Image (cartoon, rainbow, N blue to C red; front, side):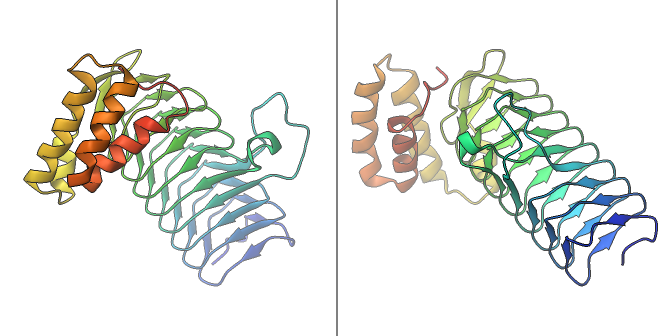
Length: 256
């Protein structure tokens, strides 16, 4: 399953059933789970742990040093879950000591060509990053979020569940769950109704989320005032509860 022209360090651990293409380089302290396919000319540096049934396309670079001036060669890690698709020329860096020491990728994500995931990012499950989308350090992306092509996310930002970021969006503040945002800087453009419908949300639940959106964005309230009202609405909707908790616990200001 390993092409004779690949270079695989003896200190790596490659499970049975892993395919490694020609001219790929797998360094020490790399673990690759069963069923993962690694194309040609891929470079993976350790410490990196890759789960099962991933597909990594040619010329991807995984687990290289963080692009952070504070990094001084400390042993930090990249963890990638199961069933992810990582396309051509994607770059995903390890963490830094200051950021917890780990960059973590969940399961069932799609990373299209030329994306970049910087140090200490935490990405959930079923996330899509379209071509050229890039994350600064310490960014968190929650489940089912979608980043359109060439979306740029500033360091320390968080993007909530089921959010949709349009092509070329410049994100410098947190994006609450269920929102659609676009522009540079990003501005809210309603909720991701079509995405929620496709994922099985009921019409009633979508209406409740719309009501929460209007409370936050159309009533011209202070954030503290909006949070109080959102928490009341959350009594009738767990999804609104997710929305309210995100706004309440924001690490930066939110897009408004």
